[in-house]
Length: 209
Image (cartoon, rainbow, N blue to C red):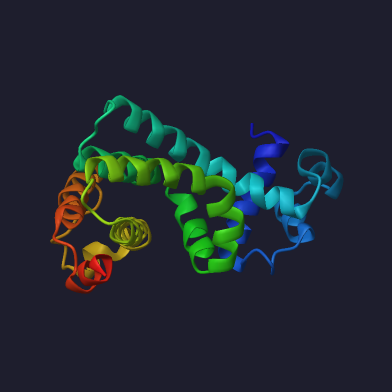
């Protein structure tokens, strides 16, 4: 039997994903979950705290696994190992728990929400750790270029998460994302090549001035 706290989290996650954070009231959540407002206040104190708890529940395991993989790669990980440590946890975890992918879509469709509630609170420190790893693995890559390429990597990851469900239909069944390990391997090869690519001419000129 699901405990009350988990029921509230599950329901809040579903409604936030479907209707948005601002449009979903605590009353909506308590009605759907068949619990009283006192239970929400007891476990989460406020709607803001409930939103943070919903996000943290999904992000914390991913961040923990990312750091574990990065640490396991040793003091001098390759670009490929760094990219895999960033991608694999969220892509692999998303397969057994696909119900939270719509929440990712909702968060990413609200940039200010992502910046304030997700990046600054839960991702900034992890992002810095990966940036430092890339800087060590690619000492000749300018900082601006490194950060752009990390942004492109995050975009590719997001695209895989949000579009995997319809990819078979889009490709006539040629691309099957159900084998998540194969998806990770393809993404690592593609994105690592991007990190190793020559610096864009415009950037190179600006860095030289």
